[in-house]
Image (cartoon, rainbow, N blue to C red; front, top):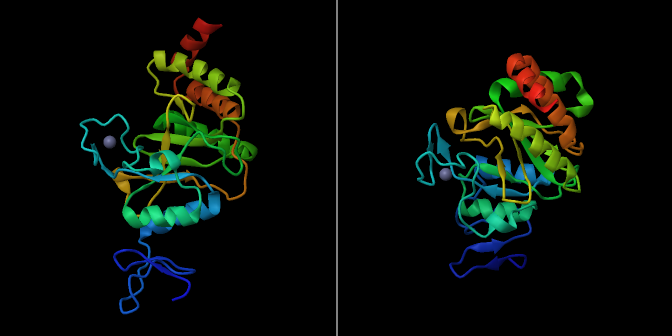
Length: 247
Ligand SMILES: [Zn+2]
């Protein structure tokens, strides 16, 4: 027991191995599936993570009717700001919220990107973009499918230029009624839900394209370009109208 410390309630709060055993007389405490998924993401991807509110179809566990952050907001706690990028911290946090779905925290530097960001597209446009990206494997990055849209993880770059350009570009589509957005800018904290066991179907998301550990994320501008072509193939009339206005 020299490698452990006991908390006030007698729980072992630190050990050199294994999942915080409660007592030698009890069976080993193993992290649940959601916690294991979070630890796995931290180990393989090194993305900052936060535990999110569970959702089920239309309802968000936060209690807000028609929650504006449905499926993508963290439960209250210090990690909301600190976020957890190390497997050790993730273990600690998911011990407190064992069932929580995993959220990636955007706007931070991560392995393979200056700043982790995301492009969110309605499902139809997103699927067309996925098809185009699959033909250009150099540009292909991880993408998440769920809650009626496809979310592409991207590198926002260092300076504000790429982000500002993409936001201006997407503002045109938003005015035309298309729900396209860039997430991860400095204005607010944005989150993307990651596939988590126990949160499936209407309550969760799945990988449309799984992440490859150690691979750089595609730059924002490249994904915006592909989205533009996806809009053109999905809604040709809308695409012509918007481009005619800005030509
Ligand atoms: Zn909510």
